[in-house]
Image 1 (cartoon, rainbow, N blue to C red):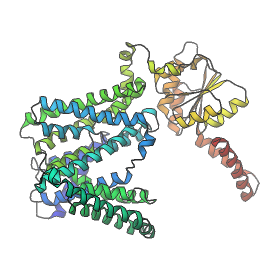
Image 2 (image 1 turned 45 degrees about the vertical axis):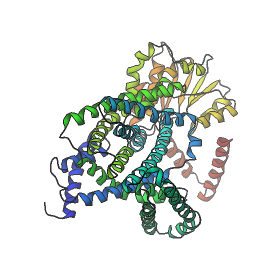
Image 3 (image 1 turned 60 degrees about the vertical axis):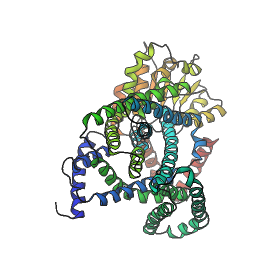
Image 4 (image 1 turned 120 degrees about the vertical axis):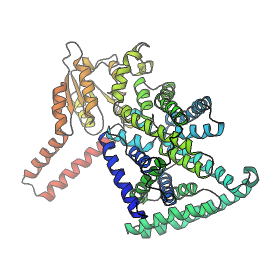
Length: 564
């Protein structure tokens, strides 16, 4: 190919798009496509990067800096207070146990101690990007296991940043040829000086300056890029790594009221350079020593796909979570993270990691991301498959506190959105009813109203079995999740002679028919009812100004009732 960087990148991106299209058809994260594209265009096959390695290496560093900048932008240590004990313990516990067992596996495979620790650290962290995306696709981000999984991802991100900062300091000193102890005092003074300058600038200069330029989105974008690379360069000149500087640059803008705008503007640029970063990593794969690469890769992949879920399952069970939530959370975290690539990439640049280690991790990444995507998509089916095994140990003892023996006339599934108004009607009718919800705030509100309520997820068959649902005259579901509603309908219909009337809830037309086929007696359609209601309002002969003023007052009264 002609010595033209533009043609090189064009060909590289054309190949990447082709592979990404096939990967997308397989419902896989696109990061796999980027790595595979790198392997195909690297020295092993097409060798498109020949003579351009330094240019692509520079692009890769831009991608790493922007990735860490955005992580710093979203990282808030104060979140730990809101995450809670469970997420903190599971996140920290999983990191500790994965590092320990990962190091043992690598040592048994004949690796030296230092590479074993480094690679064990790299495989420890799960991918926040992949997990959040797949949970959002499944509409599971608000479930019990989804909330705690995202919480432990935040804890992992904080630990990963600390590890990258620490290894960056150690690695930079090795590059400088100085002993850690001998130069620590000098490095400490430089660090305090740089942090002081950055803090004072961010505290007293940034708010006013960003406020003035925020009116222009282009100028805000330009300033953000300049700030990211400028702070990273300043920190680098002080003797630290660029990665540390990028994190600090992000942290300084994290509390800005313009943070969402900054993040949305910078992400497309980050994504472009990250694509090149993963392509560069894929091109560095060394597969000449097959046994040296594939044996540890397979061993570590099996450990991540089986051992990691088991570790998290046991930690969640120790914290008294149900079998279902423990298993689903464990299955969700069965892959490695982009942090691992950044960690090893940083280590390679300072001479702490060999190309063989990166090749092993790359194979592990492709394998675990590929299979874990299906583990997340089909986690409910996997849980149901495991139910006979769980049954050997008897009922889930962590569900005994929510076992219901008293019957209710009606059950409401989901308090917010529509449920609170349904509850008002049931109270007015003097019916005995209870509410199921997995939102702690909703349960606190129901307790203030002295309404019987139970914390749980209706997709959990064991939880449903502990409730006296089949003895009720009416079950009303207000939640949007179609699959969860079908699970509850199936549970109710399996009861011998069950005469419970079931009202379901649908937010799209296709779901209406599926819920009726599952056995619902009636399916609410909020969008249709809302459209019908507003059309009836518009048909009134009341002037619009007076009509909407009256409706606004009625709405305010309803919102006041909800907030009480």
